Length: 552
Image (tube, rainbow, N blue to C red):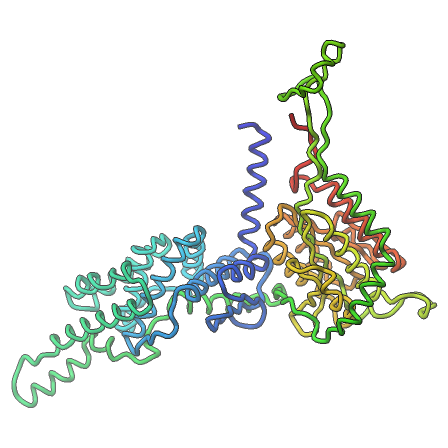
């Protein structure tokens, strides 16, 4: 393997790792692909079976990432494979149903999602390291000792989670000390049958059979060995103190927490460790006050007329560069039979070579700042100058229209902040024609703060959901953002293979993104957007796309 190829492979591996370990960026994408909505924000981790809520978490924290991905893996397995209509039962049977179902659904998740075993391995390791998962003490309630044995023994022996080995061995040793000899053999013969369960109902039936076996064992222990009222009373008192009977009669608070509950507690605690570093994930929603379609059509007509020359120039330049060009050459692999006659005339250029055209397999997410400062003109003659928000919405619409004409280019547009906390306003979606969403652009008005880093996180998730080989995020802002957080976010995007572009309206954003423009007059915004995107598509960053090169 050549040195160049090794470097490329290393860069690809680093990029894949960065993408896979970006909880804020990929968490919602993975959840969506597995049929559940993921929201990052709030104070605690919880789920209702359809939505998984994670608290706002630090952007670059390996432990938070391990806990978050592990919880997402486990809970999405429940959504995909658990029948929530099946009654779990009460007491020990209910607790065993939950423990066995966790093993069944995670085992199915391992088969479907190759990275699932790694996610669960890191989750269990983090839970043990933090102390949320710990071995039962000798004086713990017998129900907890029994359930811990079932959970950790199956985690290690059935799911193959190496991090659970120590917990499984400790739980087994304590189980043997607590319960009578022979019970472990009977319990093992039943509980390992979870490998053959095909549904939640079968898991519950297995738990019921285990409960029946334990009840029968408890009754055998309780059979009176002596006669007489006093001796019988002593026997009854002794029976009530037997560990197995205590396990069967356990109160709700005497049962252990499953992997999901432990992960929720751990990630909630993690969110409270350094709240100043936490970052939520915004949600994309359409504006709550869209204009009528007639007003949207009028806006579309006006913008098309005003930016027609720019749109045609951008489309023409890009389309011209996507073409493959052929030319004669003296060396090559293919002979042009039409030029063989020229060889006798002394022209040795009888081979055909081609120049690969510009690759435009690109997804572009436009993000525009609509904060309160975008609502007023910064010039003295306010009546003669368009407000920044008016020019921004027109420029976004015109740019999206132009990009949509290019084969292989997918485009979407959104504005931040949204009409409510933790929202962005979606103006144009990847899957729909931009001109059919003109009313959303026309309805955009200024208001709110500047949650730029959060908006970039949302945009990254949208881009990573697209299958294009290149991904561009174009940001237009007039400043007043958290610079440290913004730089950290841009770095994370680059490591995930997303190229960030920036336009500063009355401000310089070159310290934030390498490829940027600064405009001092809002009327320059459409041209700046077009110019920046053209430059990015024509000259991709190193390693992000194939360069134009000749081929034989």
